[in-house]
Length: 399
Image (cartoon, rainbow, N blue to C red; front, top):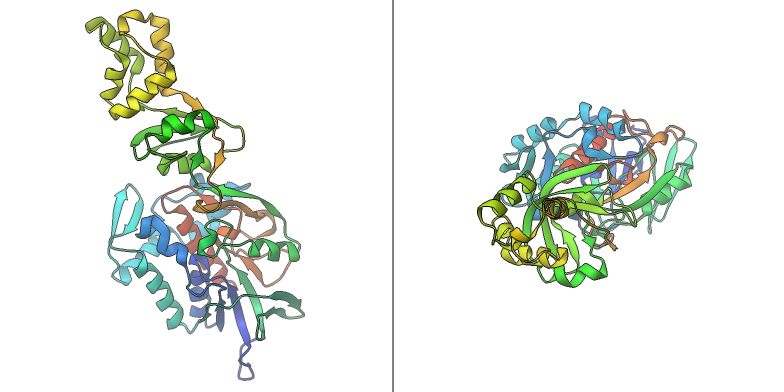
């Protein structure tokens, strides 16, 4: 559709959604000489990039692989990640001289703020002539004999290829909506059920007050939900479990499913309690726990467990039960904090309808889906942004 007869409303590629995946796709397609238009209903693009990593953009994880993603087909992401791996994006970051740091193994953050990452992506789009129109909601999409017609409030635009990069339902204040799912259904693609992911878990009523009183305490734990387990920091807040540990577990949580918390990961608690009882029989459990945990948390766990009195009053079986209670402390969350607090959306456009190499819809020529709108959800730590980069590049090379 390129050529001297092209009108102002005709493009090779229209990308809907100027977030991480959309910007990456637009820059990649433009680098191939494609005439690209990038549309976004929000007046400011990529607000989730700016919020990422607490405002310092956890822009990738060096070890991103299928084991760090949830999907009905967890290996769907493999092709895109191999074609555009984390080191490829890191090379782009370094070419722009963006200062970054590795806070934990593999997790890369901007040193000062997220803004340089967004500025870099916008610069990449400008360099290849990709046009960005912010504050331009799409009112309708229709397939044509050769491509698609995209209606806005003021005109109808035409393109050979259409890329849907509209994200999911998480963080509606940043412009999230279900638009991409509606487009998928319009063109006959299946959409897997969605749910908030990487989101705080709300406490059941019986625990809301005793644990809510400890708001602000953060401790390293091992948390397990189903077959998934993570060693991260757990943050107690008013009414919820948060911090990396709870956010990771939330992606696997389902209604009425319990989660297990090991308050003393890596500690041989049964042996230590037996040794302490023999050495200092009048010592109490609270004092023991205070050696590992903040005193207020140690006191509350003892109250909740009904553990009182000196260790000399505990039998071997009772000490084993205490150890089990500390290292397999179970609760059933009341729910999650919802999409308003979620970092990402789990579920989305069913990968069975997409090519893993190009992100193209198998049955709709010229239609692509990238990023969070697809049923590929990463763990905390930069995996979701890496999926945005990799899937955006995959589509940009083919659209």
